[in-house]
Length: 212
Image: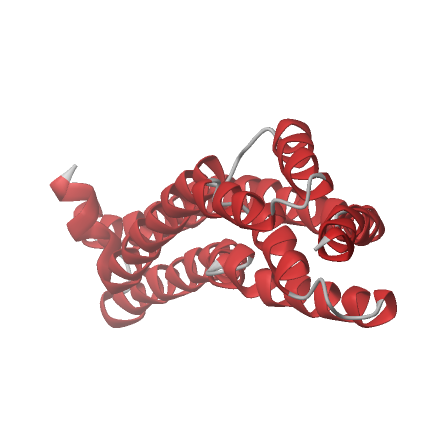
């Protein structure tokens, strides 16, 4: 294995460094999405029950105990419940937009790794081939094939390494992008439902104030 790494040259070291960075990004994002994965229907119904009773502090506590983009969105909506409905929608949309950078963190870097890894492999192929032809240019017919083998090995090893790194990077990049898009679509669809829920919770609070 070490012999292959040495034969691959500088380009292979760069590809290996990118593979480590890509693996770290993939693992971090998968753990992040697992952490924010909650039963949205159950969460929504629990908060809705508290809001409809006018127990806004309880609803905020539920949001704090369930870290997810949906709970962050609901929390913002509850905190701005005194706003008119149109203003609430705008606030919720802004809150949804603020969740995007958290969801997309390092995803563009993973996409870059997926795209440049095979190009670096191709670069290694070119430099390895140039070395092989450089040997032929200097010595003409070469009696010792091992002199040529070094350049040919670099060409083949870097090509293979670039493809090996790029394939899983592309697969996980597309998987993560699709996951992010699904979360964002859900958040957009939930804005109207959140506004209705929050305003429904105002009625019990108003009734209590009137009784006082």
